[in-house]
Each structure stands twice: as structure tokens, then as C-alpha cells.
Image (cartoon, rainbow, N blue to C red; front, side, top):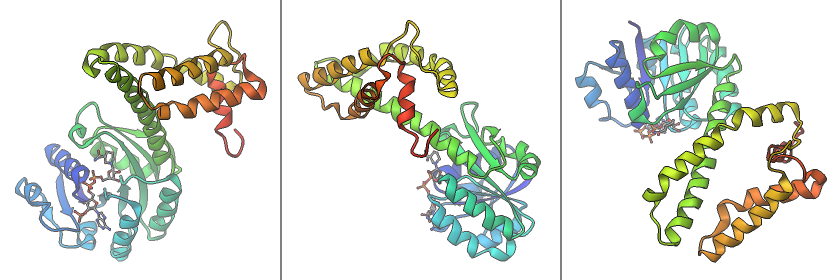
Amino acid sequence: MTTISILGLGAMGTALANALLDAGHAVTVWNRTPGKDEALVSRGARRAQTPAEAIAASELVVICLVDYAGVETMLASAEKELSGRVVANLTTGTPKQARALAAWVEAQGAAYVDGGIMAVPPMIGTPASFIFYSGNQPAFERHKAALEAFGDAVYVGPDAGAAPLNDIALLGILDGILSGYLHAAALIRASGGTAEGFTPLARRWAESMISLFPDLAKQIDSGDYRAEGGSNLAMQAAAMDQMVEAARDEGVDPVLIEPMRALIHQRVADGFGTDDSAGVIELLFLNGR
Ligand code: FVH
């Protein structure tokens, strides 16, 4: 069993620390505001008074604060203790922030691994939880078994920015699904139905649409969006006009579906009306594909 320090005992940091204790590791904890460590200490965790003390206690240092600004300030206060440690930073951030922090941490003589947590606190340590990791691969491999106490550890490459990139990509899918479901449920509620009654059908539809991802991926990677017997964009532009009109008729603001409608119309206006909808992706690349 490894000795591991956890810095940041919010909802997520506390769940991570509990998962390590469940797995039998020796755990040292630190949190900026005192008092959040009581339950963990009563389970056997050791309390550190400062970030420097927590970092000095273990080779593997797991950080989970609310943002990178906090992480940077905290690590700067413990600069001297970093040499020889492995910093696994599971704080949500951007790829750019992760790369800059990785360079700084490695310049202090420590190894940097970034993490993107694809779970909410109650899921940590269950089979439903997975975490993207990127950055220093030897350091990741050395501590992979311990990190798996949190959930499946998925390494996505040596670029420290790769974990947050995958994290925000999947969060984009979450937002899309949530937007679609809220729009649909608003329509059902506004016309007297219940979200609960409608949800089994919504789920069936969502599952069959998700099964289209591999076909969409082939089109996106090849850049060949021809609709062969499928659903062309000109037809979809007309259908989206009806969806927007129907929403207003039923007393629902179409704000969540308007952006996609605008993109589909743009793609048709650009001369791609006979293509499939995956071609809309070409309008998203700010610097070319
Ligand atoms: N909770 C969730 O559902 C999501 C799931 C996916 C991943 N996120 C990310 O995890 C990071 C931490 O989230 P959290 O849920 O633990 O957040 P809080 O419960 O609000 O706790 C925040 C902790 O951060 C500490 N903190 C904030 N600023 C500083 C700072 N300048 N210096 C030191 N520590 C700081 C805060 O300390 P305190 O307020 O208790 O003193 C908490 O320990 C986050 O990136 C999510 O996006 C969670």
C-alpha cells in the first residue's frame, strides 16, 4: 500500500480520500479551511497543518481544489518540498492551464500527471467512475494501481493537456444531452404531460441516437459527409424550422435548439444541402480542421 497525500477536502477531495482509506492506503490530508478533515482523521487519515507538510509526507500527492489559481498559489507555498514527488492534479481546468502547470511542477524536480474526473463524488470508487490521466507516463504507471482506487484510470497521452481536453469534450456531450432533454421535457410539460411519463421514450430514443456515433466518427475523420440514403441537411433545415415554430406554438422558448438550427441553415447556404448532418462540424473549426 502507498502513502498518499490529498490536498483539498471539498466534496470531491473527501470522496477521493475515503476511497484511498477504503483501499487500505495510508493517507495524509490537508484543507485550507480547518474542520473538513474530522471524519477522515477519525477513519485513520493523518492531518497535515500546511500544504508543505502534506506534500512532504508522500511521494504521490493528489490535488483537488476548485480551480487552478488555488492550486498554483498552494504549490508555490510548498515549492521546496516538491522535488521527487508525483503531483496528480485532479482539479478541473483547461488544457493550456494543465500544460503551464506541468512545466512549472517538472521544473521543481517533480513529475506531473493531470486528471479529469468523469464521476460525481458518490460514484468515486465504484465501477461507474473513470478518470482521464495525462502527462508523465512513468509516474502514472508507477501509481496507477493506487489511482485505480478512485475508478478506472484511463491514460490518454504524455501531453498534460490531454486529460482536461478529453474531460471538457465529454462534458460537452453532457451539455448537449441535457439541453436536448430539457427542451423535450419542456414541450411535454407545457402541453400537460409529465417528464416522468415521457422519460422511458426519451431514453430509448437517446440510446438509439448514441449508437450512431461510430458512423458519425467515420464521416468526421474522412471529411466525406455524403448522405447515402440518410437524412440530408436540406430536409433537416426544414424540420428544424418546424421544431422551432412548434416550440413557440406550445409556449416553449426554442433557445436551446436555435444554435443548431442556425448552423444547419448555414451549411445548406454554403452548398451542402445534400450532405449528412455531421458536416456541420466543418463550421466549428476556428483555425481549419
Ligand atoms: N463535485 C463534482 O461533482 C465534480 C465532478 C467532476 C470533477 N469536479 C472537480 O473537482 C474539483 C473539486 O470539486 P469539489 O466538488 O470538491 O468542490 P468543492 O466542494 O467546492 O471544494 C472545493 C475545494 O477547493 C478548496 N479551495 C478553493 N480555493 C482554494 C484556494 N485558493 N486554496 C486552497 N484550497 C482552495 C476548498 O477549500 P476550502 O474552501 O474548504 O478552504 C475546497 O477544499 C473542481 O475542480 C471540480 O470542477 C467535481
